Length: 213
Image (cartoon, rainbow, N blue to C red; front, side, top):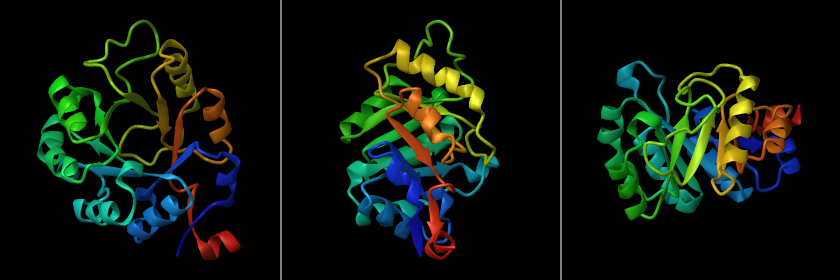
């Protein structure tokens, strides 16, 4: 069974759990997260474009039926064509947040997300280096700074926390989240950078047996 690593209690209200890290029990993981007062992060990826198999639409539908949809954030990882193919199906489930890649972050898509009761966040990888004006394609409701390349399982790139700090200091009214390789040791650094949410996968979701050991 899925359990939460005990260290999550050190960061009340800050962590969200990525159910991508629980491939055999994603619905159960989502329920465990929600029961623990944590938001549920869902990575939906473009497998046809060479990306790993993320959370399926069927799994997302079951998760949406099991937990408060306001707690669900869906990150679409892939090309603009992929986003256009899946976004209507995502919006039909009315998640609280939809994270779009920079290339797909247009006023039309953002308006569609908001019309379905969601908030539109922009995912930032290498599109902005933290210097000067980021020139958002359109105004976002929040910013997701990726600490690893989207769709990979790389180690967290700590140098990207500088970009996080640039966001939190330059846009004080804009919530910022981070995702990618965050561990118990890295989470305090993210908190110190002023983020609103830290998304954690493998370091947070564990089996009850392994946690007991």
